[in-house]
Length: 357
Figure 1 (spheres, rainbow, N blue to C red):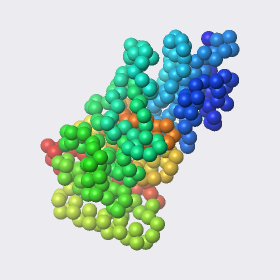
Figure 2: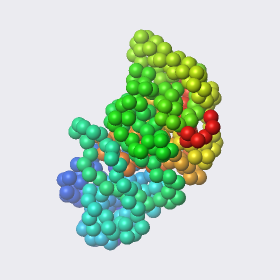
Figure 3: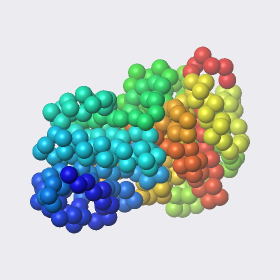
Figure 4: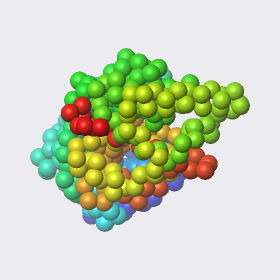
């Protein structure tokens, strides 16, 4: 048996002989990748004949790999392909390998018997409407390090502009301040924290305080933020006006707001003390678009931070497995956690209501 691991940069059928004869449904699914996603195809051959193929894809700069499908009529070939991808992932420094299934079938059971762990599907797993609304996907995971210390409910944002409220909901749920994220709460929090589109750190902190959290804001500038995507002076003036109001309200309520660029040591200490972090990032680097974006960082294991990313590129085949408990190397998080020109940093630490401000 001979196994090759081949990079995929175009149509999967063109990667190796015989791949084009695989089931059309598989090829359609595999060819949805795009942007800056990194993909590989592992093929198994016996006497030159293709007897198995496995497709893996992941976001760059991250520490996970996702096996999208394994085509292998013989179970031992399936095992060989999965082992090949897993061993390669560990050599490349990955912390997690995930695997998608379309059904809880015999392959699902064999994988569990080999020590993989089920990843329960969240209620809000993908887009709520449109051509990229996902079908049923089941997931399993294998970890090189320990699992996150607490289970944080995941939700995929239901609009293009509610990453902040969804991140806040996930963080509040982790602290026991919400039962679970919902679409109704997503939009209510957006109305509370919005700057007329996205949400800034001060607005999110006020919304968090409304939920009973003790928020701590570290913002590296006192200037209005998130003005980069404004198209007119009127829009910039409106956002600045709203943010000045948020800052005044935060002062009146005694919220902890500091003007300083946080470092990863600060984040490590807060997570160790039980806090959950809403981190403003520039998503370009692990997504194919430059945009301010909120993620929730809920744990750290050595040099890897675990985050829930409210956004998935569903049109490229991403599912909740690409965004839930997303392992980010410290260097990646340090790079992404700057936004704007000139660049600034924004962090909202959520402490439970029993923590003194």
